[in-house]
Image (spheres, helix red, strand yellow):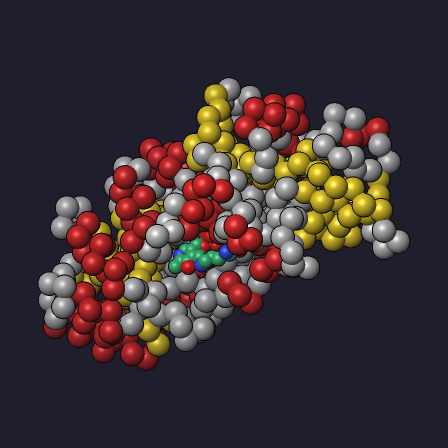
Length: 413
Ligand SMILES: Cc1ncc(COP(=O)(O)O)c(C=O)c1O
Ligand SMILES: N[C@@H](CCCC[NH3+])C(=O)O
């Protein structure tokens, strides 16, 4: 990695929080304030190259929902990746960033989303992944019968938390036994049925058996569509990253091999990873504003909480935290609870975490914040969202300005 980062492990597939230059992060926080997301485009490129090398023949569509900031989308467009979009808003952002392959995965799509995507599809090719028969009717009602994938429910779920396991949940995709009938309907209605899609869930690491089961299942469903001459079978995303300091990285070679072994469809393999491409390219910087010793723990109050990074509150997700105090290594450690400014007991970034003895004004870095970080930020408690700073080698610039309290009032009427 140019400039700031070296791999302590020597394993290029993993970038730990300790690999970021503390001095550079301190400078960025001093220049732009906190809470601040930092996203390193060089690392995004490295992740894309590693993925491309492991899946040389696959169509790779980046799951935009993981990080839709403009420089991230532009970087991945330059790397030749397509975009898998979860909303009309994501389609617009990917289109504006110059992504050439646009796919929209319609989950209970609001009318406004369909209207907007159909409008874009009049200018640029958009492929729509349909997860319910109803969606075909609603598209045809809009005089759009273009390229579609059918999303099958593979009845195989996987992922880091029950809330992100979509495979098997009836909300997502067409039941496998109905796929053939819906395929016939799609073609009867004049759609160009080009692909099949399924997704098991997000954050697969270590045990690859769920992934292999998914790929096998999707291949079986593809075989049911043999009469329909589909070109592409997307097995979704879900490739995990190590959040905990002791987690090993995903064995991408093993994952690719398991995929090849299990993939039996006579069509081009597609993957749509989000997290894998961006998670370790991002950190969140937070400033300590309160240090409160209590009998149970030392509470470290910071200016970034669940409104900046929702994952710990939503999924009890673990994110590494590092003190960037210049003398951190000379301080002793203490058991801490790192808490945000929101009035909810879920507003903690970490509990029971051993950190260098904190002082008010210290800067903390939260690791693996590049995926589902800024994207899931909210303005709960009328708290403006953080700024985002992009890094590329020695260059850095604020690519999303800090939201202000005035911004929050702008929609009032
Ligand atoms: C349809 C679909 N594709 C791709 C992804 C990307 O997931 P991940 O960020 O885990 O790779 C998701 C989210 O889990 C998804 O719902
Ligand atoms: N938001 C989830 C991932 C969900 C992926 C959406 N299909 C997370 O942060 O882990």
